[in-house]
Amino acid sequence: MRRNITVILFFIFFTGELSAQNPSPKKPAHDTVKTIQVSPDQNSKMAYNNGLNSFSKGDYPTAINNFTQAISGNPKFEPAYLGRANTRFRQKDYRNAVDDYKMALSLDSNDEKVWYGLGQTQTMLGNKGQALSAFTRVVRKNTNNGDAWYCLGELQAAILNYKDALADFSLAISSKPNFAEAYNDRGVCNYELGNYKAAVDDYRQATAFSKTPEAYNNLGNAEYKAGDNDGAIGAFTEAIVLKPPYADAYNNRGTVYLDKKSYTDALADFNKAISLDSTNVYAYCNRALAEYKTNDLNKAKADCNKAISLKPDYGSAYLNRGNIEEAQRNEKDACSDWQKAAQNGVAAANDYIKDCK
Image 1 (cartoon, helix red, strand yellow):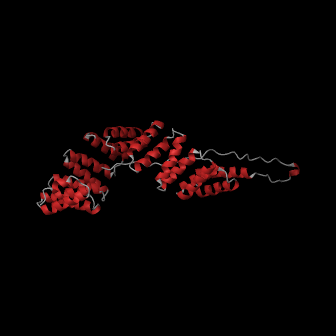
Image 2 (tube, rainbow, N blue to C red):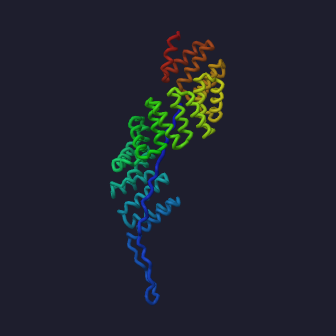
Image 3 (spheres, rainbow, N blue to C red):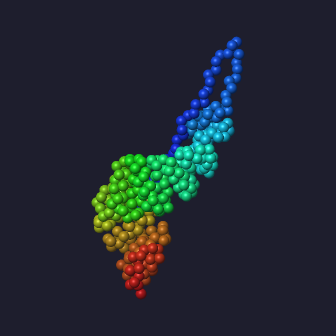
């Protein structure tokens, strides 16, 4: 059954406005108009503040121009590089954003916000190692930065390093006790590590803080693995209530009904999953098994064929089709399918192959 891992990028907002000390002109003697002299540094501060204002309005091109003007007036104005980098991030101009973050770090290597922004941007570019390094710099400076710990956990989970990811998510939760996404994703790690009861606890906490259909779907998966079929059905039902066109939740609930031998309910859920997502290979394979159990062999075989057409390396579909072929006394075809199932990672198929001539 599928699980969901939340991907969240927290955006770092700018520091407050800098005072440009704009002088108020006094009326000169004899009403003579004079030009007020503003220093280059004051111009840079005003341009920076204008950039903040444009950014807040979502006017990113103007913000870029403002921050660039601030940098032109003061090439060592670190907040302006950060502002332009954040704006480029919003524009998905990640490579140029990296350049600005690095320039900001050359001016102030201890700025936590810059390291965090650089980590976000490297993540979007797929540079996991560099992103890990950036977020690590953040938490070394501030061990209570829950968002950075969360991002570290996401990166560790992405490379299947679930133990380290679990530790990072735990630190994120310690810093932010109501962090629903961190509970959800720690649940994913516990699930992958086989800690199903711990996963159930995490998903329940996630749903307590944020009732998302994905968290309830994950809770259902964990409840099922922990042996609580009724709890799993309840969680999947809640996911469907929150998100009626949720094909995966219907498929997952159908799997539990199948395990309970409630074949009518299982078939209804698999039918609904397929009506919502005609490419849901798992629902076709599961429906085939329900049809096999109710002796509707031709439909079962057709669903296996459909699953294989969608996913030619789907070992479970070959195993199921082999069982159907055996029930139809097509032993040669059954053995061929079992062999394909074994070739595609289904170890149980080897027990069937032993009986093949």
